[in-house]
Image (cartoon, rainbow, N blue to C red; front, top):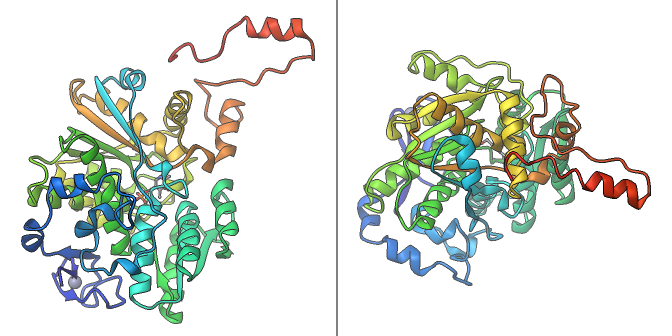
Amino acid sequence: MLSILQCMNCGRQYPVDEVVYNCADCGGLLDVSHDLNALRKIVSRELFDQRLGSLERPYNSGVWRYKELVYPDVDPDMIVSRPEGNTNLYQTSKLAHWAGVETLYLKHEGENPTGSFKDRGMTGGLTQAKVLGMTRVACASTGNTSASLAAYAALGGLEGIVFFQNKQIALGKLSQAIAYGATCVQIAADFDRNLELVREVGAALGIYVLNSVNPFRLEGQKSIMIELIQQLRWQVPDWIVCPGGNLGNSSAFGKALRELYELGLIDRIPRLAIIQAEGANPLFRAFQKEFEDYQPIHAETIATAIKIGNPVNYPKAVRSIEWTNGVVEQVTDQEIMDAKALIDAQGIGCEPASGCSLAGVRKLVNDGIIKPHETVVGILTGHLLKDPDATIAYHRDQLDSIKAHYPNHIHEVAPSVDEIARILSNGGEHELIR
Ligand SMILES: *Cc1c(COP(=O)(O)O)cnc(C)c1O
Ligand SMILES: [Zn+2]
C-alpha cells in the first residue's frame, strides 16, 4: 500500500479503509499520507504530460491525471468522475494592471462540472465512499459542497444528503442540490452548527461525511496546484492567491506544493496568500498574532461560500502557511464585489467569494508584500451563475453598505428607434477597464 491515514499531531496511523475523520487518540486532523520514496520512482513531469488530452478514463480527468499523487492504490473501476478539472488558466493584462502586477493568471475552478472546485474534492470523496462500501453520504454546506455532493452521489449511485442553513444559500447552489436529487435538509442554524450536526448524525447513522474534514477530498483538491503548474510548463509562479473559508483549499495547496517539491517535480515552493472576508476572518486574526491565539467568530459576509467562523481545517492551513512562507490578508465586502465586477466584465466571471483573489492581490501589492514583477496566480473558486442575486443587486446598487463602483446599469428605453439610438450613442459603462 502506498498510502495511509496519519494524524497530523501525534502521527498515529490508520489504514485507508477505516472510517475515521479525526485521530482517536488526540482528536487531530488526518492526512492521507503517501509513500513519497516509492512514488519518486514512479511519477515524473513526462508521465503527467503524456496523459494530457487523454480520452480515456480516469486520465481524462484533471484530478485523476495525477492519480499517483491523489490515491495511488485505488482501483480505477471504483473512481466516480464526471470528469472534473481541466480548467482554464486566463492571463489578464487588464486585471494585472488594476491589481498592480505585471503578470497575473486566474485559474477558473468555476469551470468544473457543477461550477466550483468542490468537484475536485468530491470525486476523491465519493470514490472513497465506494471503496468503503457506503450507501449514503452527507455534508453541511454553504452551497457548493451540496451541489457537488448531490451530483457525484447520483453519478455513483449513492444517496446524497445535504444540510443547509435556512437563509442565505445562493440560488444557483440550492437549485442544483434539489435537481440532482439529494435529500435536502434545511436547518435553522448557521454553517458552523450544521457541520457539528452532520458529524453527529453521520456517526450515529453510519453515513459517510464528506465535508472538507474528509482528507480524501483534500487529496482531490491538490490537483488544482498540480494542474496549474503543469499549465505553466512546470515553472512555478511566485504567488498563489486564494479565498479562505473552511480552509480546505488552503490545506490542500500547501500539501500539494510540498509533495511536488519533495518529489522533484518543482524546484521551489511558491508563496501562498490566503484571503478572507473581513467579516469571516478567524485565520487572518490568528495570523496577526503569529498563530499564538485562535478564536472562532460569528461570520458575516456577502460572499456566502466563505461565511465560516470556525474553519475545520485551521491547523492544516497554519501548516500550509508555514510550509510556503505564506501570508493571510483580509478584504471588505466592498472590495470583494468590486473585484468580482471587474473579473465579470472581462468576460471571465465568478461568484462573490472568488473576488477575494483579485482584491487580495491588489491589497498585497499596495502593502508591498507582493512585488510588481512577481508572477501571481489567483484562484477563482466558483462560477458566475452560482449567485445571480448578488450580481444583479450589485449592478442595481441595491446592496446594503456596498456601493457599486463598476456598475453596468440596465437602460430603460421607450420602444423608439430614436430613443434607443440616443442611448447607444453614449457608449457603455466600463470604459475604465475596456
Ligand atoms: C467552498 C468555497 C470556498 C472556500 O473554500 P475553502 O476550501 O473552504 O476555504 C471559496 N469559494 C467558493 C466558490 C467555494 O465554493
Ligand atoms: Zn493524534
